[in-house]
Length: 122
Ligand SMILES: [Zn+2]
Image (tube, rainbow, N blue to C red; front, top):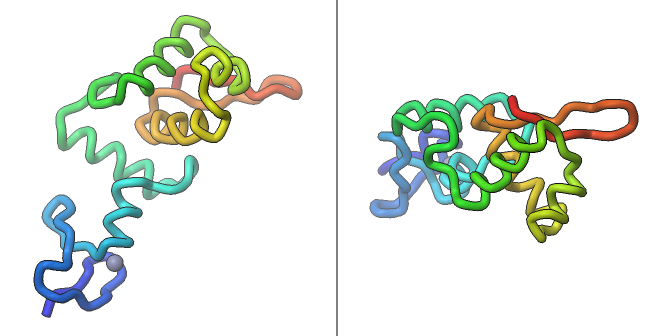
């Protein structure tokens, strides 16, 4: 009998997912590989330690879209989500998802100025 390392649910042989040497059930595996919230500190540390483990820094290991987002923010200095989404032809929700990942990796952050929220480099 094996158990999920995270939620302790019992798993049948062959049902567990290997995640950095841990055995996880499908739900926990999805949670660990797709951290749900931008400001969840455990998600941040797991995204960071995963990148460290893979020897990645800067924009290494990012998708083309994530690199594009990062380079636009880098070039502009600061840009609103609306402007960035329009420039990339993305829906705001799609941009939010990508932004959350970049934020986990401490590449970009959101900063409030007056009544606008700008995306800037970390
Ligand atoms: Zn689990």
